[in-house]
Picture 1 (cartoon, rainbow, N blue to C red):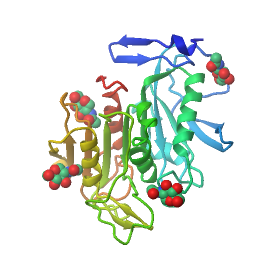
Picture 2 (cartoon, rainbow, N blue to C red; picture 1 turned 90 degrees about the vertical axis):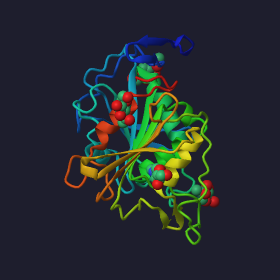
Picture 3 (cartoon, helix red, strand yellow; picture 1 turned 180 degrees about the horizontal axis):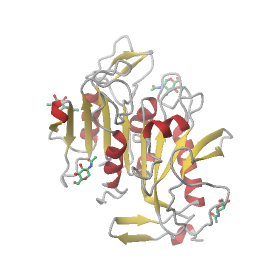
Picture 4 (cartoon, protein in one colour; picture 1 turned 120 degrees about the vertical axis):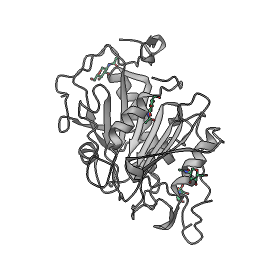
Amino acid sequence: MWPLSLAVFLTTALGTSALSAGCGNTTSPSLTSGGTGSSNKLHFTTSTGTHRTYYLHIPTDYDINTPTPLIFSFHGRDANGLDQESNTGLSETYLNPSMFVVYPDGLNGQWQGDPAATDYDDVAFVLELLVALSDDFCVDEQRVYSSGFSNGAGFSLNILACDEIASTKIAAFMGASAAAYQGNNSDKDCEPETVGIPCTPGRTGIPILETHGGADDTIDYHGGPRRNSCLPSIPHFMTAWAERNGLTSGNVSRASHGGKVETYRFEGEDETGLVESWWVEGMGHEWPWASAGCHINASPIAMSFFGNYTLDGVRG
Ligand SMILES: *[C@@H]1O[C@H](CO)[C@@H](O)[C@H](O)[C@H]1NC(C)=O
Ligand SMILES: *[C@@H]1O[C@H](CO)[C@@H](O)[C@H](O)[C@H]1NC(C)=O
Ligand SMILES: *[C@@H]1O[C@H](CO)[C@@H](O)[C@H](O)[C@H]1NC(C)=O
Ligand SMILES: *[C@@H]1O[C@H](CO)[C@@H](O)[C@H](O)[C@H]1NC(C)=O
């Protein structure tokens, strides 16, 4: 067992890794590893006494002495962690050979940031769960990532990434069809291109990636009033992240898939593209998967994106 004070940094061919307190800790024999359907349903009680559940995917090649990256994957509203696992395929070895994936269940099927999720402290839940998992398993604390769909994407990109503490524990954030609600009772005068986006991350240069369908009639790409709140347009939301990250020179766009997919990158000095916005013509409200009308698959995009970043910013 490594006492916390002895947590060491390893420099490998893949960049910097950081061993968590759980490195060397024997894995309980009741836990299973493997693809979709093999994740472990686990329970967690927060410091304020709230009972939570989550699914933990353990990669088949997990080694108790090897710092292993960890991805949080947050489901959409009225769904659960198991739905998120099957909708993303992130537990499949061919997509994700070696990272943990945590698929938590939202309370009442929703996440902090949703207009109906008043008084939720899902940020505290995620931070406490991360500490607990890092104590039990060999987690690479330089490579913890966040992803989600719809309300779960809004939680990832608009709540966790904006949090002073969570933004210093999680290396990169992505989301598909993000619902980034701003404020309460603000739908009457909602200006999606200019609505204020309060956000106070604890570091700068936070990698952010979003995918969105041009035919999303649940969370419109152009934003607007919804459920007594205001959705920013995706360009406004992403530009605000670029400005926060100090990327002021505008985006570089690239068309692919016969012009049906447009990727807007706001690039930094190291040309790694810290903020990336994917628009897909004709696609509805979904986690893009290799089905008709999607053109792209968000899961390999997320894996590629996460693989490019560590908490200290070093490219993978
Ligand atoms: C090792 O993991 C077990 C659960 O698998 C946990 O109860 C225990 O606290 C961990 N030990 C240390 C020293 O972190
Ligand atoms: C909405 O109102 C609740 C209750 O007053 C408050 O806790 C919450 O922070 C508000 N949410 C936003 C996004 O302003
Ligand atoms: C990229 O820049 C163009 C030109 O300023 C703008 O029209 C577009 O909305 C931007 N895209 C995003 C996703 O911000
Ligand atoms: C990750 O970095 C590689 C190499 O620069 C780049 O080609 C790729 O587009 C990046 N991935 C994403 C999703 O931005």
